[in-house]
Length: 395
Image 1 (cartoon, helix red, strand yellow):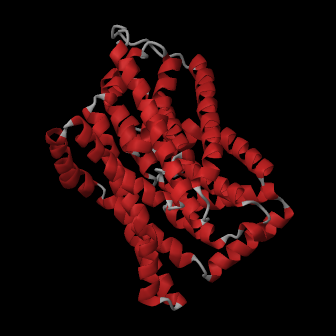
Image 2 (cartoon, one colour):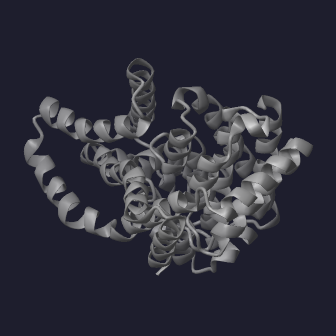
Image 3 (cartoon, one colour):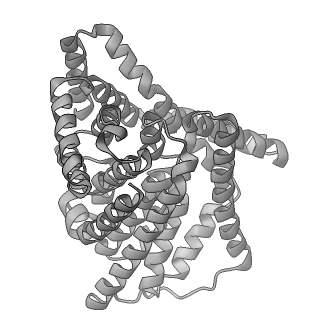
């Protein structure tokens, strides 16, 4: 329903601007690279699943069950590592691991959202980073250290706040016996972390050498990795069933997501150049001339308001990225990119219409407001203050 609304509104705006079918076509073509990224990136997870890396994560989380603070750190760190590879599938996977452990819903709501939102801030395999930097024409290599720094701070703040919360709400120890983690499982966890590090380093190196868009690089790597694994491990027979599952199950399951991204991308393109968009751009430019702090707060407020009522981040943030000129505002492209990506992460957690919020709400049996504002409002407030402070420094 949301996708149909955004698609209809986008088409109406394109015809109202006089762009007609050509404008609609351009809006859809602009978002196609992102659709490729979203549909191809899950292929990276197939070799990892076949090698048993996900089972090692399962064993780690079960091993930490009797230590709530370590358990929370384990969940958030696991999502920090897995989310760039699996996207929302990482939350689903971790929830499956923990389903029979009966951990408190408040702990799940906090850990899932904190762990996943950190990846939104730094991973070039996410639409947030790849799309914002794509429209601002900024290489990922110039941003990623800042994004990683903010992500680590978000993880640290989240774990510190949970430690305070757990002291006030002690968690009951589970009756399951504590089992030591085997050495081969530890090795697999280390290899998994190294794999993600090599994956990101390779992507950045290719971008630096070729100057290609990161969206193209990620799409190609997603296709190549399973092929390389099958070649060097003689694992074609093991790969084929997973290819079949990907084609017949995974892709059809992405129908809603693909439709959502396509319609949001069209709407974002259609909004550009409208009188409303020009007025917002003019207002924000004037605010920036008065105070960068007020400008940052205004941008975050606009994004949070529109995404909270149902518009997708792609539509709102794409329109802002294409409409705002860093030189006119008086800030660097890096600072603007960081502000938009921080706003994307914050709105993804808070909006009851975001895929992340909807999924976690269903898992823990609470409303989107409880999962977003109530469980994670303080964490997001602290991280937003830290993020804006960094933006003020690098302006």
